[in-house]
Image (cartoon, rainbow, N blue to C red; front, side, top):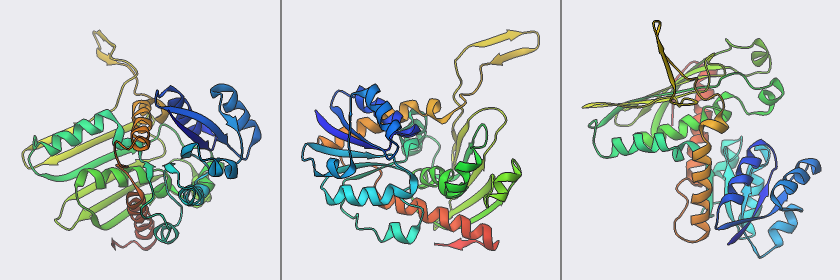
Length: 324
């Protein structure tokens, strides 16, 4: 059993806490949060001890930490945990600022970055089809990621913007599936969903095109509102066909009648859609602690995704493609 501590008892922290408690190789021993009520509530649910960050880092029995704190604290918490010799499971993004993230003293850190979509069973199956040549050589990707509804404006103001908060998952997926680094980025964006998002200095709708050195193309479609549930699809076009991963439904039940066949709704929230991926992430972290594997998504991946997010934002501002 490996003792781990959780930094951040908010929405995503609660998910990671539940998965850690459920894993047979892990013990969630401590929880840290600046809001005492959040820490106490999670302690009551999990049995983890409420404590301070300094106490966690000084405890030799704590093998690893989960960083699920506020986004602007991720990098500082990772640096502190690395300095203390802890293994780290950090939520995305690594930081809001590319220069700061790229210059961080984290090379060689046992750092697992939480790009959870790589662990989704559907997307892993899609990648396996690409790897086994089922559709020939990959030529282009279409990644669609639309939220069911916009987040609160208070969240938008501190999120870092659509590219760093939302599309950064898609930038990581593009890198993972393309098999080579994008070298050019062009982005369009608008505020079509909620004028308050524009007033907060952000966009709510975007189309981003990535191009690799060999000419592969990836189009990423993002919106803060789909109007029909949580829309998560990938289409990969190869020289011999297409492989696609579609949306996940609430159930497989269909109603057939004179008007045709009616299926169930799409899953409506990321915590439902990616529940299996979050569990798989925690299992991967447990394997890291046991020395069975190294982080499959690490520091360099976090910096690369952040570089694409900043390039997209620059392209949006200038109206020009950005070369990396």
